[in-house]
Image (cartoon, rainbow, N blue to C red; front, side):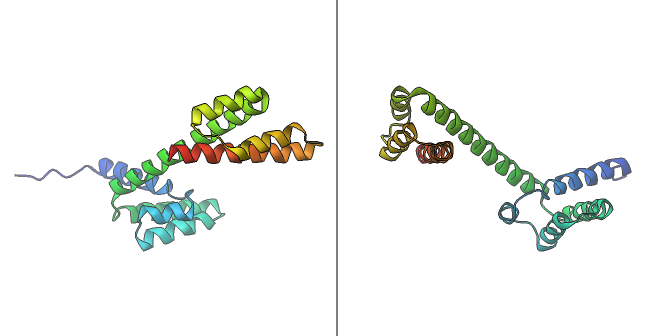
Length: 163
């Protein structure tokens, strides 16, 4: 009776996949890295990779990360990265919705504001006041600042109703 062990090529493919998974950790923000629950050695190796400028040093560090990934729970890391990706996509969608509403509010006047309020089930005095101030803004700089504030207010309202 012989025990079938994976071929050398299969082991290499698996190690390469673990290294590539580890490489996905390098561009993450420090708070995101902490949320994944990596071992201290792996966390230190990923942090070191973010500081490296030399191509060759970074290549060797990625190999080291791949080696450390062999002891890590790859399925857990994949799941946490997927969660982070889903959260990032949701934030980008919310940002895009806020941009569309801002543009619509700036171009549409009172009808657009009524539409926004009915879509969000909220009447916001601060947003009304910002749009009023924007209508009488005297210069380009003040307009730009008010448009930014309108976006922030719209985004805050959309985030609040999504929660």
